[in-house]
Image 1 (cartoon, rainbow, N blue to C red):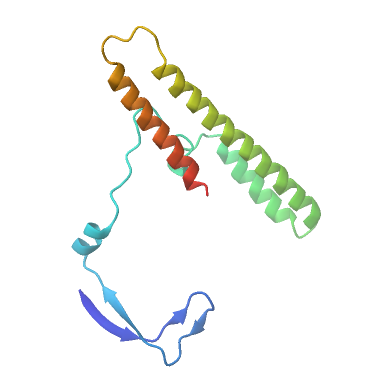
Image 2: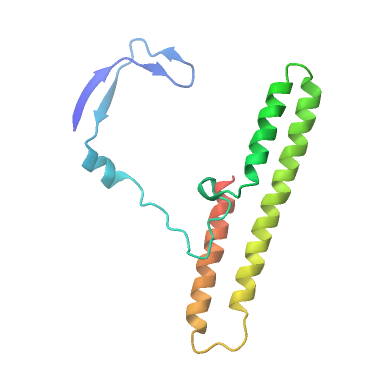
Length: 141
Protein backbone atom coordinates (compact mmCIF):
# COMPACT_ATOMS: atom_id res chain seq x y z
CA UNK A 1 0.00 0.00 0.00
CA UNK A 2 1.26 3.46 -0.92
CA UNK A 3 0.03 6.70 0.62
CA UNK A 4 0.38 10.18 -0.82
CA UNK A 5 -1.39 13.50 -0.54
CA UNK A 6 -2.94 15.58 -3.34
CA UNK A 7 -5.47 18.26 -4.11
CA UNK A 8 -8.53 17.00 -5.95
CA UNK A 9 -12.02 17.95 -7.12
CA UNK A 10 -15.04 17.59 -4.87
CA UNK A 11 -17.35 15.22 -6.83
CA UNK A 12 -20.45 16.86 -5.34
CA UNK A 13 -19.59 20.36 -6.55
CA UNK A 14 -16.97 19.66 -9.23
CA UNK A 15 -14.85 22.34 -7.55
CA UNK A 16 -11.24 22.05 -6.49
CA UNK A 17 -10.69 21.42 -2.81
CA UNK A 18 -8.27 24.34 -2.63
CA UNK A 19 -6.13 24.28 0.44
CA UNK A 20 -7.67 21.03 1.59
CA UNK A 21 -5.58 17.96 1.12
CA UNK A 22 -6.48 14.38 1.71
CA UNK A 23 -4.62 11.11 1.82
CA UNK A 24 -5.04 8.72 -1.08
CA UNK A 25 -4.31 5.05 -0.50
CA UNK A 26 -3.15 2.93 -3.40
CA UNK A 27 -4.27 -0.60 -2.65
CA UNK A 28 -2.58 -3.67 -4.09
CA UNK A 29 -4.56 -6.27 -6.00
CA UNK A 30 -4.45 -8.71 -3.09
CA UNK A 31 -5.80 -6.08 -0.69
CA UNK A 32 -8.57 -5.14 -3.11
CA UNK A 33 -9.62 -8.76 -3.58
CA UNK A 34 -9.65 -9.33 0.18
CA UNK A 35 -11.81 -6.24 0.76
CA UNK A 36 -14.23 -6.90 -2.09
CA UNK A 37 -17.57 -8.51 -1.24
CA UNK A 38 -17.98 -12.11 -2.28
CA UNK A 39 -19.87 -12.53 -5.56
CA UNK A 40 -23.52 -13.36 -5.07
CA UNK A 41 -24.55 -16.82 -6.17
CA UNK A 42 -27.93 -17.26 -7.81
CA UNK A 43 -29.98 -20.37 -7.29
CA UNK A 44 -29.86 -22.80 -10.19
CA UNK A 45 -33.62 -22.53 -10.57
CA UNK A 46 -33.41 -19.11 -12.16
CA UNK A 47 -34.01 -16.90 -9.17
CA UNK A 48 -31.80 -14.32 -10.82
CA UNK A 49 -34.25 -13.78 -13.65
CA UNK A 50 -34.64 -10.11 -14.30
CA UNK A 51 -31.14 -9.09 -13.30
CA UNK A 52 -29.24 -7.02 -15.86
CA UNK A 53 -27.07 -10.02 -16.81
CA UNK A 54 -30.03 -12.33 -17.37
CA UNK A 55 -32.62 -10.02 -18.88
CA UNK A 56 -35.18 -11.53 -21.23
CA UNK A 57 -34.73 -10.68 -24.90
CA UNK A 58 -37.90 -8.55 -24.88
CA UNK A 59 -36.15 -6.01 -22.67
CA UNK A 60 -34.15 -4.89 -25.71
CA UNK A 61 -37.41 -3.45 -27.03
CA UNK A 62 -37.67 -1.33 -23.89
CA UNK A 63 -34.14 -0.06 -24.49
CA UNK A 64 -34.96 0.79 -28.12
CA UNK A 65 -38.17 2.55 -27.12
CA UNK A 66 -36.29 4.52 -24.47
CA UNK A 67 -33.76 5.70 -27.07
CA UNK A 68 -36.64 6.78 -29.34
CA UNK A 69 -38.29 8.66 -26.48
CA UNK A 70 -35.08 10.49 -25.67
CA UNK A 71 -34.40 11.44 -29.27
CA UNK A 72 -37.96 12.78 -29.64
CA UNK A 73 -37.66 15.10 -26.65
CA UNK A 74 -36.25 18.01 -28.67
CA UNK A 75 -39.22 18.01 -31.08
CA UNK A 76 -41.99 17.34 -28.53
CA UNK A 77 -40.92 17.30 -24.87
CA UNK A 78 -44.44 16.73 -23.50
CA UNK A 79 -45.06 13.74 -25.76
CA UNK A 80 -41.66 12.29 -24.83
CA UNK A 81 -42.37 12.58 -21.12
CA UNK A 82 -45.82 11.02 -21.59
CA UNK A 83 -44.24 8.16 -23.56
CA UNK A 84 -41.60 7.72 -20.84
CA UNK A 85 -44.36 7.53 -18.23
CA UNK A 86 -46.15 4.85 -20.25
CA UNK A 87 -42.93 2.90 -20.80
CA UNK A 88 -42.07 2.95 -17.09
CA UNK A 89 -45.62 1.83 -16.26
CA UNK A 90 -45.28 -1.11 -18.66
CA UNK A 91 -41.89 -1.97 -17.19
CA UNK A 92 -43.31 -1.97 -13.66
CA UNK A 93 -46.16 -4.23 -14.76
CA UNK A 94 -43.73 -6.66 -16.40
CA UNK A 95 -41.45 -6.64 -13.38
CA UNK A 96 -44.23 -7.23 -10.88
CA UNK A 97 -45.64 -9.92 -13.15
CA UNK A 98 -42.29 -11.74 -13.20
CA UNK A 99 -41.85 -11.43 -9.44
CA UNK A 100 -45.39 -12.69 -8.79
CA UNK A 101 -44.89 -15.57 -11.22
CA UNK A 102 -41.66 -16.57 -9.48
CA UNK A 103 -43.31 -16.30 -6.05
CA UNK A 104 -46.14 -18.60 -7.24
CA UNK A 105 -43.59 -21.12 -8.55
CA UNK A 106 -41.74 -21.16 -5.22
CA UNK A 107 -45.01 -21.45 -3.30
CA UNK A 108 -46.20 -24.36 -5.47
CA UNK A 109 -42.88 -26.14 -5.01
CA UNK A 110 -42.82 -26.04 -1.20
CA UNK A 111 -46.51 -26.87 -0.87
CA UNK A 112 -46.29 -30.04 -2.98
CA UNK A 113 -47.92 -33.09 -1.49
CA UNK A 114 -46.23 -36.46 -1.22
CA UNK A 115 -42.84 -35.46 0.04
CA UNK A 116 -40.44 -38.41 0.14
CA UNK A 117 -38.64 -37.44 3.31
CA UNK A 118 -37.05 -34.37 1.73
CA UNK A 119 -39.54 -31.89 3.15
CA UNK A 120 -36.93 -30.02 5.18
CA UNK A 121 -34.65 -29.71 2.17
CA UNK A 122 -37.51 -28.52 -0.02
CA UNK A 123 -38.44 -25.93 2.61
CA UNK A 124 -34.81 -24.82 2.90
CA UNK A 125 -34.62 -24.29 -0.86
CA UNK A 126 -37.92 -22.40 -0.79
CA UNK A 127 -36.66 -20.12 1.97
CA UNK A 128 -33.52 -19.44 -0.05
CA UNK A 129 -35.66 -18.61 -3.11
CA UNK A 130 -37.80 -16.22 -1.06
CA UNK A 131 -34.64 -14.53 0.20
CA UNK A 132 -33.46 -14.14 -3.38
CA UNK A 133 -36.77 -12.53 -4.35
CA UNK A 134 -36.52 -10.11 -1.43
CA UNK A 135 -32.95 -9.22 -2.39
CA UNK A 136 -34.07 -8.49 -5.94
CA UNK A 137 -36.82 -6.23 -4.66
CA UNK A 138 -34.45 -4.49 -2.24
CA UNK A 139 -32.03 -3.82 -5.09
CA UNK A 140 -34.75 -1.75 -6.75
CA UNK A 141 -34.95 0.74 -3.89
